[in-house]
Every structure is written in C-alpha cells, then in structure tokens.
Image (cartoon, rainbow, N blue to C red; front, top):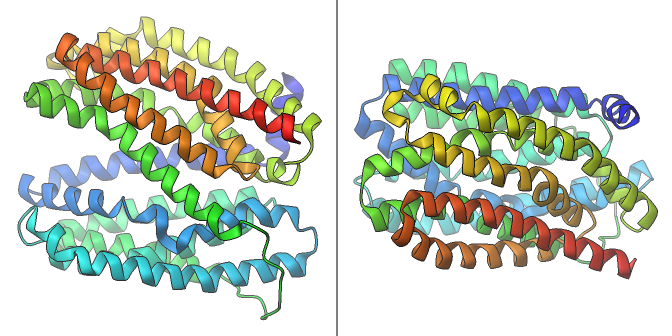
Length: 408
C-alpha cells in the first residue's frame, strides 16, 4: 500500500488530485453564484444552451486530443511526438470546424426549443475550437509526464472562469459568462501552445477512429447519467421528486474525481505498457488493493452519516433524499472499484470502441429498467437501477479487460 502511494506521489499525483478537487469546488461555486445573481429565466436559458453544447464537445477536434494521449506515449523519440502533436493540432482544428458548422446549422432547431437563444449559440460555436486547443495542450503535458503543469492549467482555468465569469455576469448579464467560458481556455491554450516545426510523422493505425470512439462513448455515458433524472421527471411528473433525486446523486457522482485523479496520473504509463500483460495485471491489482479499502471506508462513513449530510447540505425538506443517497453510495463503491479503473484501462490500451459498446448496453438497460422500476417504486427504483448498473458496467469492463489480456 505504501509503495502504491509513493508511486502516486512521485508522478505528481497530488497536483492532479488537487486540480480535480479545486475544479469540482469552482464548478459548484460558479453554479451557486450564477443562480444567485441571474433571474430564473436567465439561468434557465444559460443552463439550456450549455447542456445542448455538451453533446457536441466530445467530438471537438474529432477526438484528436484523446488519440494523441493514447498513442504519443508509445513514441519515445521527441521529434516524432512533436510531429504527432502538430498533426493532431491541424487535423483537430479541421474537425472542429466541421462540428462547429453542424452546430451552426442546427441553431434554428435548437433555438426553437426555448425562446431566442441564437445569440448564445452563435458565440458557443467558437468554444469547440478553444475546448479542443486547451485539451490538446493539457494532453501534451500528460504525455511528457508533466502532471504538475497539467494540473496547474486545470486550476487556472477553473479559478479564472469562476471569478471572471461570475464577476462580469453580475455587471453585464449571462452572455458575458459565455464570452469568458470561451476566451479563458483559448487564451490559456495559446499561451502554452508552442507549435513545433512542421515535420513528417507516421500516423498510427486506428488513430482517427480511436478519438471518434472516445467521443461516442462519452455521449453514451453522458446520456446514461442524465437519463434517470429525465425519466423521473417524465414518468412521475413531480418537480419536487426530481429535486430530491438530483440532490441525492450530487455527492456520489462528484466523488468520482478521487479514482479519476489516480487513473489520470498513471494513464500515460498504461498507454506505454499496453502490450505488457505483467504490468497491466500488476497495476490492476495495486489499484484494487488501494481503492477497495478507500471505497468501503468512505462508503461506510457516508452511508451511516447520510441523514446528517443531507439535512446539513440541502435542508430538512430534502430528508427523503437520505435513503436514496444510501442506495447510490452502494453504486459509487462499484464505480470506484470496477467501472472507473477498468473503463480507463481499456481506453488507455486502445479499446475505446469496447468502452462505447459497454456504454450503449448500459444506456439501453438504463432506459428499460428505469421505466419499469420508476413505475413500481418511484425514485427509489431509479436509485436502485442506477446503482446496479454502475456495478454491471464495471463487471463488463473487467470481463473485457480479461479478454484483452488473452490477446496480448
């Protein structure tokens, strides 16, 4: 256990953990402040346009940033890495232009759903470029084992959006937040860009398809996390029940940053050793040793303190959420131990298409099981289905990990 933690610290894992934590806190504070300073109508419009944009973001750059993170660690020559970075940058901007054009064409349809939001979407088209740029720059630092610099960019980004975004929104309205949301990652990305000289490089097989599959899997996962809330609202048609369910799920899902920070720290090592069966098995065993203990200790504390946590954070009117919280904590343990690590390991060894297939299977099961469970048991049924599916998706990812090991 001590050796595992020492390795995490040696790879500047504490900086990655801190950046994940600060990002979560800043995101929460940003939402809280915007709710306070904007009218319900303004906040509703802003939430709508950002939610709509979220379906396009996974495809920004055509997934070139994800492909670069997967394949660049396997290139030990710096010139080849720089060449691959340059290729990913130019092709990524081309893909971003195509996705941005698609979004632009869809603006009339998106606009018709909730008043006149076209001015927001006209601005947010440019976020597809700034998002890709900052992510690719961050991936280069990860590839070069500079996790500290990677973490600093994330922290700067979150803090600047928090203070500049909310500050300007207070004086100039919600559109100013959108402008900050776009320009901060663009400026940070340009500051850290450092484009290498143009050079020829051999593009790895499946380089393009890998990034696309990551985007498809991300969309399926995103839908999986939002489908239960949508079905609760659609089938029960009680806004109070939706609010109770949403409040119960905030903390369990937010805590996913803990295993994600560990995996992020070691991701490039996993990519480098994607054909080393002994390394992959050793990493998986070390991870399970550490996070089985952490998940059960944290889960037990949260489970038995559920009433106090819900009442302190959300108020007595959300007391019903405590039981749902306990159910979702059981699902969180499954995500900690199986779903998050083995899903990421599959991605790091180039099997993003397998992850996408798992995500779509779980998405279909989510819709079918939640439909019947919500009718039968209400929001308790939704919580049970969500927790069970977190374990099932983890077990499927683990099974596919063993399939991959047999092929190595």
